[in-house]
Length: 302
Image (cartoon, rainbow, N blue to C red; front, side, top):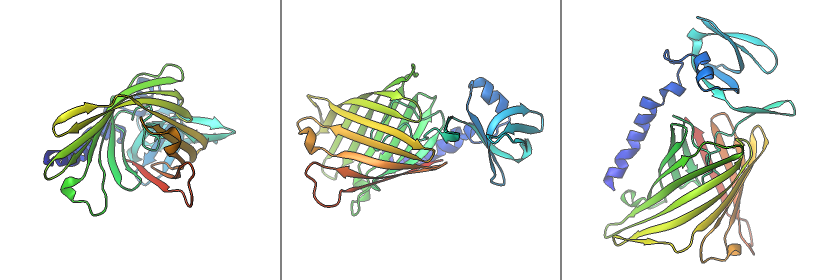
C-alpha cells in the first residue's frame, strides 16, 4: 500500500518529463510540421508568452512568424519568439459559431467512453468532491487513471486507491470501441479488500455528441481469495452538446441483482471552458421525496 503512494509524485514527474512536446513550441517540431504529420484539419491555437491566445487556420510559416487567419477573416502574423505553445483544436461550426470539441470526451460523469485521452494530454479530476484522480493519455490509444477516495475523518493510510486503464481502438465511421479495467484497493490494519471491473465499451458519435454502452464484470479480493461476479453490469451514458460551453451528460448503471428502477439516474449540465469543466447535476431515484442528492465534478486540463 505504501508503495502505491509513491506513484503519485511520479505521475506529476512524468507530466513534466514526457508531456512537453504538446505544451511547448519545441525546436524539434514546428507548427506546419505538426499539421502535416498529424494530417490535422481543425483550427490552430497559439498562446503567446504574454498570455494572448490566437485561434485560426495556419496560412503560412516563415523562419520568424506564423501567419494565421481567424474565423473573422483577419490575418495575423505571430512572431515565433513570442510563442509559448501551440496545439491543434478540433472544432465544428454551428449556426456560424465555432464550437470546440469537448476535452472531457473520454469520461462521462464516472463511466468511461471509448474515446481515449490524447497522447501526452493530462487532466486532474474530482468526482463528487471525494474522488480526486490524475488522468493521462499515451499514444492516442492508452488512457491511465490514478486516484483515491478521500472521505472526511478517514485515516490517510486506509484511503481506497484506484488504478484503471483503458485501451481504445481506432474509430471506424461514428463507432469506437475500448476495453479496460479498474481496480480499487482498500487497506485495513487487520485485512485488506479489493474490487474491480473488467469492461468493454462501445461509443457511437463524434467528439461533440456521443452515446456509450458498457458491459463490466466485477471481481473481488477477499481474504486473499479471488471471487468473480456471475452476471455483468450494464452502463448507459450520453453526452449531448448544446452550445460551445454547455453539454448535457447522463449516466445509468444497472447492477446485477438490483431492480432497475431502484438504481439512480445521474443527470448533469457540463459547463465547458478552455481548461476547466464543471459538472453540476443530481441523482434521480424512483419515488424520491425531497431534494435530489447533488452531483458536482471538476476537471482541470493541465
